[in-house]
Length: 397
Image (cartoon, rainbow, N blue to C red; front, side):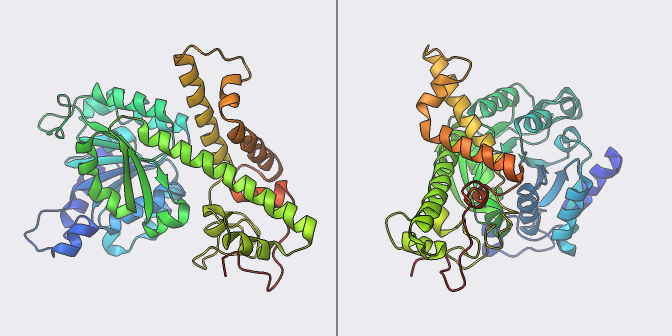
């Protein structure tokens, strides 16, 4: 691991060597010259299945990138995704606290798999907002969480950021209450394929000024940004609502396909094509079909295509998101004075469909393991069969 002094020097050299447009929009409207200022430096913590792809797109867009992940393989994978020019704009920080002190850092993005990891990265001993970070001087006036962490966590992080002072000489964003960073919660929708292609959708909660500052970076990683509201946590609320709907959608589709095929003897691929030509079609049936041997509407393979159900949205993450949705309902009920027993009656009464779906995905994790794709309920819970040869591609005709 490089020393902090050597690492910050490398970060500065990487940023100074970058001379292409900072964002896709800027790159398309003007060409870089030797006199152009270097593009902004952006920090990224969490280089997992989604984070590594998003970070790579930031570097490819021309930004100076300082990345941080405890996993050597994740760091190596990021380097492997980048060409020579992009790698020249890449440096690694040993800790989030060290990353937070990078000179001229414009923004920091985090993409973490759990609440525990998120709190450690933001609030831990070596976190972005830790005393260690504060003593090294926080230089980023914008902090953005891309994880699915729930509204309560986003409000907690926003409050912590509001109590953290920026380094001397760092100008806060417009709308900030004093010399403090602004935050956004911007959970993503679209999955691994969209992360790789740079076509993610961001569901954003937070101030207008913070979103305006974040747009060039978001546009390097995605194709659509939806501002839910200026309230911290509102992007998370939208993401949990979306994933609760998706969980029910996928489980219902898998159940319908297996029951229909068993009752009629019709090839499940043909049943899927019929649904996609009718009113039952949905994102899961068109873009993410769960039947082995079928592909998405665009003709691209999906985790079910080869029957392995790997490389997509893990069942453990769907369970996590359903749990966060239930926690949110419980918190809301408690705020209204509605009693809740130890079994979570208030949440299950308010979320009967999501609760049932959580049982389905819990069974999937038991049978096939936590990293199986959530579409695996078709095979491992309902015992669905593969499409027969010539039985349909899973798209409408």
